[in-house]
Length: 387
Image (cartoon, rainbow, N blue to C red):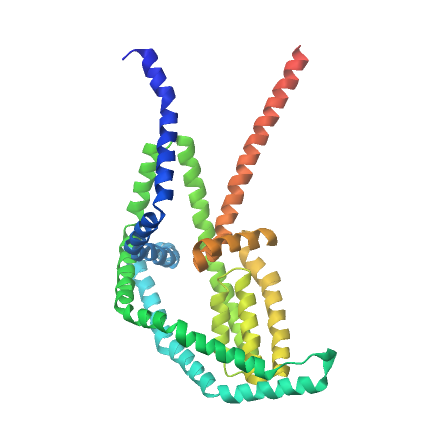
């Protein structure tokens, strides 16, 4: 083939790729239902392995720490078998934690819900009496209609029974499939954890083969940093959630709330959702206290919980984070909103570590071009001096 023809074909190759992309985009747009159905089916197959990867990633955090700890042991056998021993100890720990949740925490939550439902009429009567008391005070000409509240609650329950009954039945019918997914998730997480080094080496080999050295180095650098960010974030939020949940439980116990432990556990779990999680948990806790113990106790609880939240947000969390995620509040809110809209709760949890690494990448790009511009400017100045 003549060299000129080869060069012409090479110059036309980007246009060929662009034409294929346009045709592909048109086909995807014209067959939206087919594409979404295919993606939904594919997601159904991939789901157990995706959650298996997430479970393996979470388990790998204590697993790596245990491996480093056993690697420093004086006994030679422990150092040689540190990987196997770390895996056994980690899975024993998680199995014990799961047993504790199923055996103690879940029955307690069920008893608390049963107790709440059993005493619901008395709580509701007390609320109506307080509404009547507030109406009699005639503060700022505010009148709260108890009938409106009753009708609203009745409508909520009616809508629930009509609209959500089918979804509850479908959920009950799909229980065997859920159990199968959980088992497959656990099995895949074990294999991913065992094969993690091989998977990592294979991905590095693929990058070396198909990506330029500069891109390869950048991907490895920022992937390692993102991994550290996620590990640190999960570690910090777990410790902070335990501290916040314990403090809230103790404060509500002092106020003699019958749901102190349940609300403390709820706040500790919601704390994984950055910024909004603890606020939402605090609001729910105050509403429950107001409904079960009256507005006076709720006001005291509100003060205690809000002070605790401020101490946690301004003292405890920054100390634990150590400046790793020094993002502006506006950027945090935007990232959590986008993450929640994109991937729900998982997106909200992953928002801060991901945005932190994207900020670092952007700063590196800006610094690179600033350096290039500075070097170009210095070169121009030197040329003018020589002239």
